Image (tube, rainbow, N blue to C red):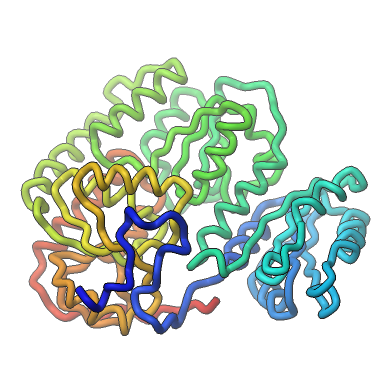
Length: 431
């Protein structure tokens, strides 16, 4: 495969830096991590922000926040570095800006350090520790150098992690459960069955996601456990587990019915409850589809393109256990625990090539040359002759048996369709 000889096998990748672009032309590119970080900060009620960077970063931040409704106690400011500060540092100016933010009534401030301060080695974390005792507002920071990652997810999970540093220990309330990765205002996506069952059993669910209030995040250490629905919230759950001993149960990485059985049993044991026959119908449907898929998909060679908020490696591990061979995986992000998932795949006998896809038009012919039996996700804007399973973003919000069933139905349906040339829609978004 000379056209992909520049790519690394998964076992050789240790960080985002090891994930190479599939084709040289990186256009239209990806959002930089400042975009989701600001979008998140602007949608946490009670959180203020201070972007530190170049005039371009300041302009970009105004665009991202253009539709944000600023609530009482919030300020969203920018700090534009001048040439002297790029050379000699911006500590003094930032200290003065933080004092002004404090006087303006900010309750908590998130410093967002962009590429230049990270390149010049500005000690933002040290500045936060030095400034905090002098201010009423709580301070935290996040480093967002785009040169350290290929894409945008780091802006979300690092921001949530930074908000986690504002938390302090609380007395645990056994009836309270944090749901990480679901918005409290998320009415368009039905509540997953496990969350409905917990509500019926009298538990109070605290949703932590964009749309939540900062006060909800600060109260989160009082929960009996964290249910994690989204990969973006997983690093925060891991940090809370380490700092406060709150166990995390990850619903977004399990697909096999047996693994879901074990996870639900562990949740029930922790909460001291019985599920009864609560999930029988969904479980039997997932088992039936799993059996069908195992027969139909075994030996199938596939590539993984853009699959939205679904993590590629846990999904690949599930499919590998059913005999599907991953040939090439697009990784939007190499997550902190992806080394563990790489080991799972290797134990199953697979070590796929990994890449970053940003240029569908150029990527598509190369993908076709790999002759996959199936493509998971979208190859947007390009004509392809192999079966695709688009719209995996639809799995967002689902969990447990219903997500597994939805996924397997999509895979089986795609293989039943006649092979035709398909063209996706245009893809938008600049860094």
